[in-house]
Image (tube, rainbow over all chains, first blue to last red; front, side):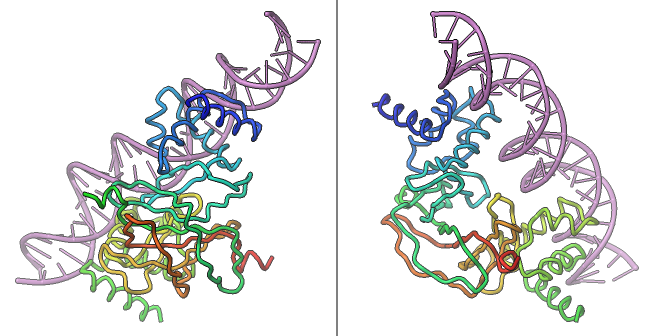
Length: 143
Length: 143
DNA sequence: AAATTAAATGCATCATAGTTGCATTTGTGA
DNA sequence: TCACAAATGCAACTATGATGCATTTAATTT
């Protein structure tokens, strides 16, 4: 099983002409193990053996290549999640809902919810949308 | 005219039981002079005579009191805009569209556009929404 | 299988954003 | 105008993020 997912990540790196290195595979493993986006501080804590700068650089190339996307939470902290589909280099399509829990601060990517249509004022040309919601998540509501 | 707007700001501070000080009135003047949100770095540059820490504290109380609201741009930089209406202490209603130009990086608050309705997955309880769009603004399109 | 090379990592260093504690100043109400 | 709370300024600190350069490592070639 670990082998299958590992192969999946290696394939992903191949696809984008990136070397299959330990730190990169580890980032992908960490992020895919969670059902929410991972904050930069969390990632940094999870990857103690990897240099801080290396982590930043990995996150940057992954974002450029369209492997992950970046979401800022209510505190302005960077969070990262693996793109589900149709993201290309320098062109992200994360037009779904990002839900930020005000209790546990987790960021959920609700990919199933596509955005409703709406019009922009004249003169504005948009090429990307994201809807943010804040409130309490299922886990925190239960208590 | 300057006197009228100055009175308006003083009234605003009175309303929220905040002392009418120079730095606070200056922040309000700076922000209201623009039709876009103002970034923290810009504000810092505009208020050279005011201490950096004081600026942070002013922005924080203003946000708590519902006088301004904070928007993060595509780079995760904090931007601030004066709330148009119905914002109360600790309860912001900035449920409008924030447009971030990818050329000039300006953040526009398009207050006239209210959000279309949509449903959340079961378990999620939302109390705030914001729609972000990125693209090119009227000014940058003209060129 | 060993050598080569470009890419990736690690380290030192720097810049900016934001916070906290404390002394000093200033606005406001008595 | 006096007194006091509130606000500002200053020093110091933490965290995030970027850059330059030396070293290591993955992939390619022989």
